[in-house]
Image 1 (cartoon, rainbow, N blue to C red):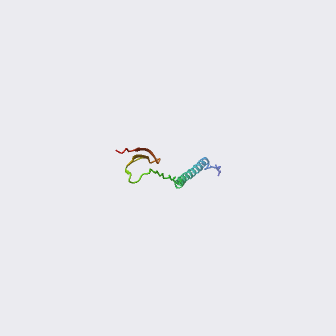
Image 2 (cartoon, rainbow, N blue to C red):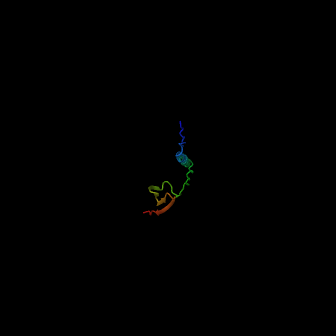
Image 3 (cartoon, rainbow, N blue to C red):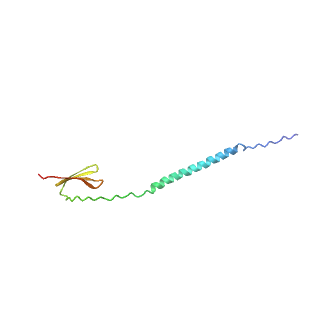
Length: 107
């Protein structure tokens, strides 16, 4: 009997580059998941650590009017018109200042 020579067949001969690519895909997938988790954590952190809103100082406007003098008020946008027994006063509510004061002439 003659012996046939054994031919060594490397079954992993073509798998080397494929294994390297598969490892690379796994690594990129893990990096992608970690970056996504970091993004979600950053959004949650930003939402929970908001700076407190700045308190606007309340403007007090003294018009030197008695309650009995005020006859009528009207609001249009950020303008307030106050009709008194002596004058018509227009106040800019947003800025807290008198825009116009029209004295009424007694008949």
